[in-house]
Length: 286
Ligand SMILES: [Zn+2]
Image (cartoon, rainbow, N blue to C red):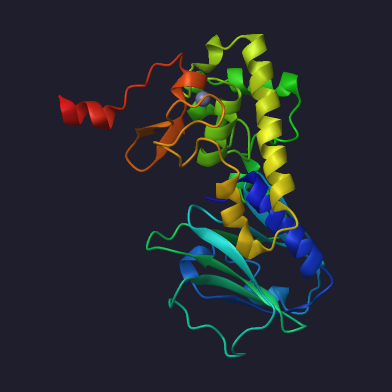
């Protein structure tokens, strides 16, 4: 799933490539992906792209005259920039992975795509990003929050730190992959309880958050959109690396599985050498 660094990089790419170009046509191929009725997609026609950025993990494409295309890419969504489209014919709704296509006046443009059968990509055409419910509820940005704000937000919800730091209403931008990396760098168990974290542990967690995300942004921005996903994988130390040695201490990276997700961590760095209980595994051996 694209998280803060990838969405930041997609915004940077659009700022470089699309700003100044006029929209020729905004096409909706997956009707269910567009969550708004007003303004209509034809409202974008003829408007120049004037900027691109993000709110948490939401991408915001800004058009002249106060119109925004706000997109949540969900788990399997992505943005593909096209130097040219194979055809000028409008997309046929409901066919293939393309959810939204934006054609620009230099015959380039971009597709918002979603792989797989679970369609969760969400696009909103709004005059103010705060009209998007998920944006209005976002907590402070993970890269912008200073230590006092970060600590206050984390302590405001009692729970396992892995769940709290990925809750977009607490702190925005961090998802499953980068939270594994942040907790590894901070040497914290993913199951540590937030309101028991010391000031020192919160300071370390804050520093790790900024460093992991900052490094990932630096690696990602300037990459071509198509290369971003591979770059994310190569920069990770524990996420998606169960069974491989930890690059810090050499212990074997382990995994805890849930119904539709999993987390990875290093026992040597994070849990005093003790593996965490994996409910799925313990059910199997019982
Ligand atoms: Zn380790």
